[in-house]
Length: 261
Image (cartoon, rainbow, N blue to C red; front, side):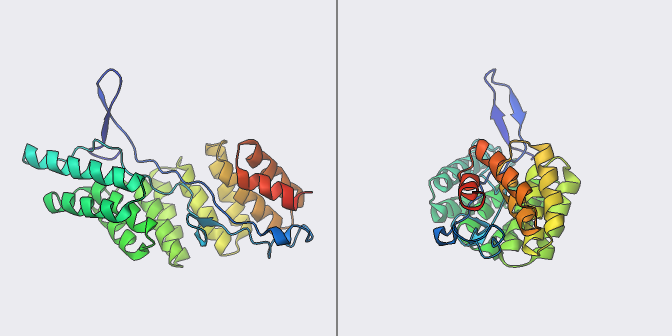
């Protein structure tokens, strides 16, 4: 649980929420490859990426902390001010105004420089702006002030993966899993880091675990399908694409149409 993050239920009681991360799998399929043999998917441009195209995939990339964050400050006016800047930054981030969001988070940190949620949120915006080193620095701070923040470890891993530090990324995913062994996104992210390293069997094992935890994790089926295809398992690849497609993943449907006909 993240300290200080609360929501009001319908009965007005407050319940602490864990951080959650959501990111859809995005990859680009080059239509000119559709007539090539099945197992030429090594040159089939199904880029494993995160928005925007061309960046490393992140399963469960950070969403902003819930509006209404409570900051523990010695002065209630300061707490209210921090909350106002946080809420404003969150809304700007949701609209894609990450520069504006960062400006608000900066103001919140001027008031309370020890709030892990503010660093976490600012890291989200830095990541979206492809300022990966700054994102890593802010995740470092979030973890410093809340060492059990498993989504921050997972997100820091994705930022490390974005700069090519795959071993560092895997270490962060391992830490997230050690804190919360049921965190499916961390297994998905670790699977992608192993995929980058061409450890397809290791990637498949991680996608298996992610799917076992969350059978509706459509993107994990897609990536597991590619890993199986690159391992020579055409039937397994197409079965995974079919499952992902049945869960509404458009990329799985594209894979079926172009690789499984």
